[in-house]
Image (cartoon, rainbow, N blue to C red; front, top):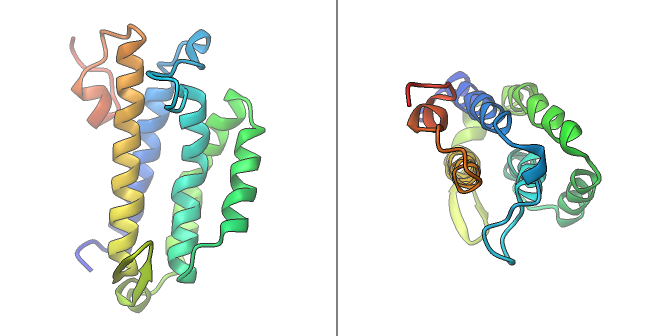
Length: 165
């Protein structure tokens, strides 16, 4: 594996940190903002992110996608308010450590087929979860910019810190 378990865990935990930084920039009056009618709103995006990473890692670990588990997790996410959603996102730092901590190096190297892709579990986690986190946080960043947060810049998106304007 190119990344060690500790590095992958740290990368996912960093995604949580950056996402929470960006979520802290949301004006609660704009939680229902959506760029177009068929895209997720800001709150829907955050709720989805409470499910996506942990559920996909569980699926990769199991070697199969459990539709019923995904649906239950989505229903639980839908019922959360904004503060509960932020708390669920914050909890992912520990969730990622627990989920990945149970996996051996051999587990990461074992090939499985999921969503039409045959790859190692480690590769699927990087490509689906870690890359997905970066993509969705970029989407949140763009939502924030579209809602008038002009002071946000590259440091907010990639470093999770407020940088010079």
